[in-house]
Length: 241
Image 1 (spheres, rainbow, N blue to C red):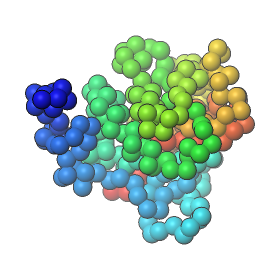
Image 2 (cartoon, rainbow, N blue to C red):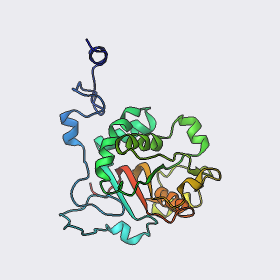
Image 3 (tube, rainbow, N blue to C red):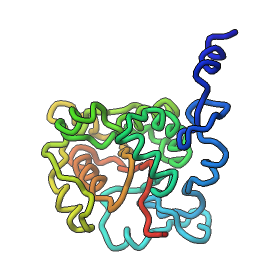
């Protein structure tokens, strides 16, 4: 018996969401896959939220939120809506030490970001403040970036940005409060930020709500590079029920 077969016999693969036995590691069972709101079809080109209808070839669609708030980046995508299975996966990754979620997300993010990889961008995870990193022991955005790098062959610049001040939780804040909370909270790393110079950048985070965190990170990147800046989230909070 091969080692892999022996391991699967002792530790059979389980669905990332419900724990049911499945055939392959780092995946969802059929029922959970069907219940996951993957963002397909028409999307906002700036934040990746799903939109009704279908987009014509080469048509750029922009959602109401992105029309009302300036986005300091060029394009954005997200894999799934932040509800149901998507929300459970993100919370498991962020608070449940579920690194296997990031492993599964690599191929999903690679597909969602088709067209983002052609100019050899640097993958830049949104940084955590050192206190939060010490408490959590890992940066979930960096795990996602490394999983995406395995799929695309791109480089990760995990230390290019610095969370230079601790910010309180975004939970319970309105849109303006979220942006105020992140103002001047992220900057190019004084020793490693030069890696961004002249490069295309794709910022990586687990979830996008208002876009305030991506905005702070994109503004920091723009201090160093004049290349395109794009954003990629595993999940996107939507106003849809």
